[in-house]
Image (cartoon, rainbow, N blue to C red; front, side, top):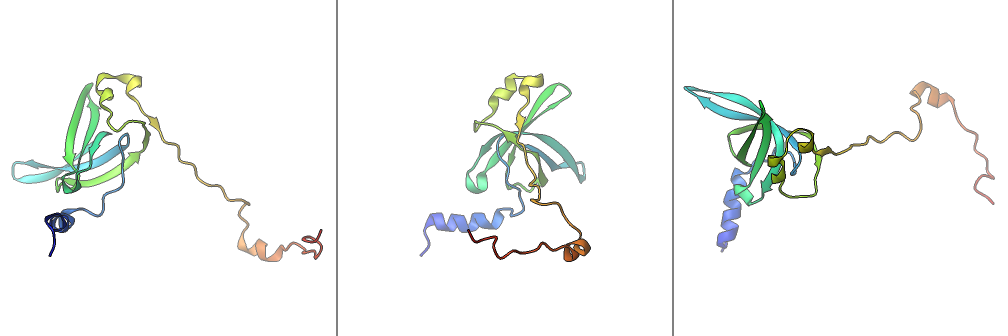
Length: 147
């Protein structure tokens, strides 16, 4: 016999989207939102900074803030809403808080967040074309490992 909580989890798993990227508070996201106009539905782009995230299973929401024509705009989106067509993380921000409501009171340069640096690993040795690598061999000495 399944408990009520287990039944709810089974039902919620049916409605969860599997293709959502991992994002956190402070990340800049670009999304396409479905907007109904008269008799047709069009996709409206919305790009901004995630200022809060509430994790409540299927009822999870996140708030995105952007400044449009000098006016701050915030929208709260359900994470698993069919209104969201696509969601892409543009950049990751470095933050030390779970809610960034202080950005509401700031403008200009003070409203910016530090961006997370991503480093690409460099190969240990320069790449040698296959034709050259087969002809170049280093001599192996039997006394190298012996002391």
